[in-house]
Image 1 (cartoon, rainbow, N blue to C red):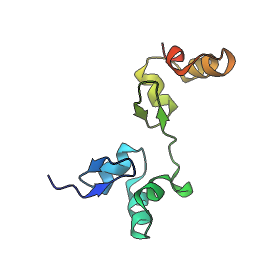
Image 2: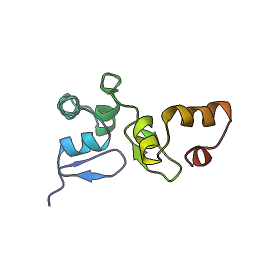
Image 3: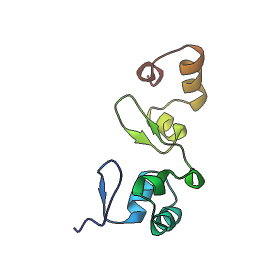
Image 4: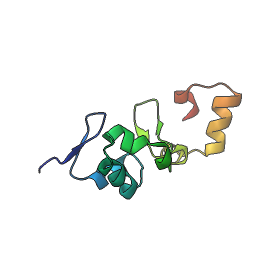
Length: 96
């Protein structure tokens, strides 16, 4: 397998599409941004490409957005927000 593209974190991908989807971004927009001369980080996180807001859990796993992380932990996003913002729970405790 020939590695064609590498992101700013050092992850290697077979294609721009694979890298974009891994980061929850629109593959076409990322490809256009790269063709414009942007670095992989700029292409992925350019302000016009903010369709999703990536979220990282307490174990270091990345999710496309808060909803996806909450699905993985089988909790409602509203419950997570309540636990973190109102109760002041840590990220680990909020995902229990």
